[in-house]
Image (tube, rainbow, N blue to C red; front, side):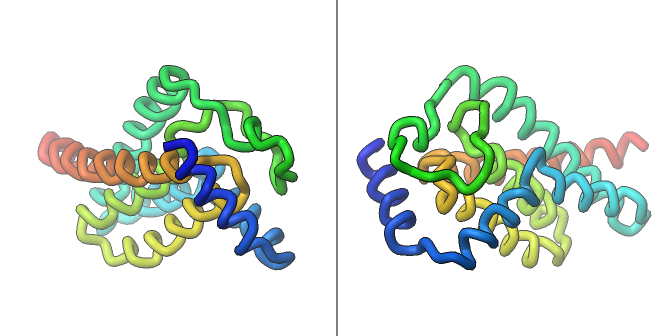
Length: 174
């Protein structure tokens, strides 16, 4: 699996690198730092009575993401990041200090997008575009393996579904 991961990463590194993407990808990835863009979106949705239930779903999904990905899986798996193995890579961002598996940026992004989708909010469509860009940026920047990103997508979809279900229960209680 590691050889496939590096083959994909090196293909992206060798064939997609350009000066404008070297500027754009760090900006896109920064939107996903600490789930910031998704937290802001959830808070905006919580303010509006019309979108509050979906905002609760996104919040629940993000909480599940933080607990399961960052607190449990990353330390348990303890996967070294690709730039620590291929030291010839010149990073365009500060070196992340946590472990690689799963991609937290990707998991948070797809948690939010899936919660929006399962809540039947049309904003899931532009959110998906941003989530895909954030996920790709993690590969472009050589800070995650493709399998980290794939795991983040799958986990995020599960958390989004669970967040939507939790939101339904929370709404029934109030």
